[in-house]
Length: 111
Image (cartoon, rainbow, N blue to C red; front, side):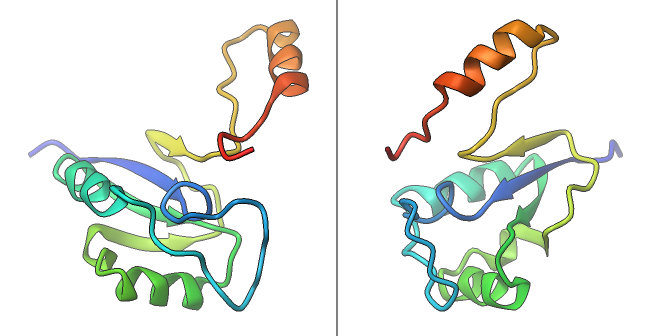
């Protein structure tokens, strides 16, 4: 049996409705379609929640939204993975000049 690849998925702005107003005591609601998205991904990949938030609170959020069964773990450590899914990321394509331009022009989708 072939080992499944791992995908790290960010919480804020990817799975929830975060729009830049951080509140350490309240996690935003789950995004429309997120449950179906992780259910589909989980068919072929091992999923790990990647967040800078408190891991206990993030784990509780997964349970409250009934998607905890799709995740192997919650971490704030960038562990080796096939793919990292984040709303604040730029994929490096080997060209520093283009990457600098992307950084200068970067805007999260919710702004």
